Image (cartoon, rainbow, N blue to C red):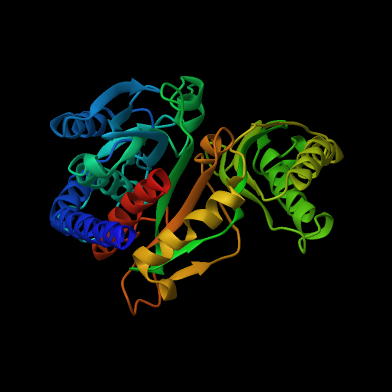
Length: 422
């Protein structure tokens, strides 16, 4: 009888706790949307998120959460200690925007201008980091009101420069790890999410193991010989040679990689050469990205690129160099942690709304955290139901349905509590 009474008391307490949590989560939705719109209207580029960081820190401090500022340049870390001792869990949101001019007709549309790689650009949250930031601010508020239910400590990591630090600078998750963000107190596990314009609202997708690709940036410089545009035989055309190099690089993927193993991508994102129509320039420069889901494939691609670029240039009497950066690792979801937390994803979203997916060739520097501690990264739906042609991330028309953000708050809150308390 005594054990049965204790069990009933446990059920009553659990029910009350769940009711308190649900009430606090539902009450935060309007705030989260307001924060998101403010960040969307006032975006800041990587390592320049000064005002964004101030707003985050001010919010954390208002909740009584210890806030550490200027981490990895502009990052903010909040530490919330529960009423009971236990493990340490980290929750992460990225806070930077992209050099994109927004085309959406929204009342909170971004009209911000800035400078990127020496060019005047628009600035837009074209990847949803504004939603990530607002969601985690909401989670911080909910958990701060429910410290009595927390067995352990929660670290809120607001990370700058996920899109990559400016040239010549360090930044992002790698710098945060370097500066000890996962230490003092030492983090046992970390969770992160990414809003998806292609996944319907109130849906979640995940994958154990590698879920996102490793990414590397590369730069190719082609040196030819300048000549009048009417006399190409008098020079060595670096633009034509660049085209041959681009064509050659694609054969590495299409003819040398075993794509039934994993996907791989080589993309040229920018070519810079020449000043006018009737001058064959002296040089050309290209930058691009490599995406791989297998480290052996990555090594082979790197090797072949370094062999092919100078060889193609030499065939046309030019010279060329290639530099490949180390880049981001594969975003790898810890197998045991993913299995352990899958019931949380299913309970919060509904089992029918949680999908296991194949790996994608996007990349995430959340992977640097996962190299240090077990981590789980998942996708949160941001597509309006019935939309059959959503705009992709990193485009001027990128759009997120804000009604999906509340599930983000609920899921991240519950992941933290379930990991610490169970």
